Image 1 (cartoon, helix red, strand yellow):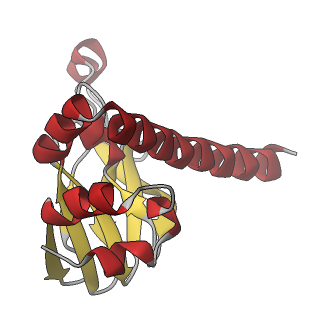
Image 2 (cartoon, one colour):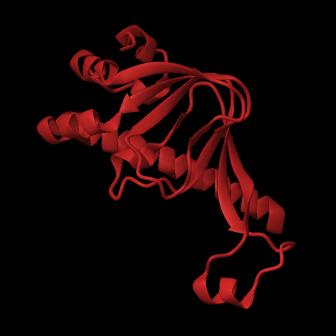
Length: 165
């Protein structure tokens, strides 16, 4: 468990009252990981979301590798040889793994540490129960997650505009 005061330092947690921050803090563990650590891969079932306290991580997705020879069988089954591409970098103060709060609880990307990282992991099974029991908490958490999604979409849109403009 981390302190409520640690959570207060990060903008994501603005708008939560003290009891709600305490519920969040009680659902946490702090971890340190080495560079290259994979937090999760896309389409895995998630039970945690994360706050980066120190370090950087990459959001990656798998795409078909155009340089690899793909067999006809690969085309029929959709089982392509893939490679990872970086679609974003996450830094201290940012959250990732929000998919652990939204059904079907599968991430839309993978996340890998680019440097040694210190993170807080939030047990979302516990938080989803709290969200169900406390509608105000659930509402605030849902709005906060929606803001993360909005900002990520805006960031991708701007990258696409600059690339194709």
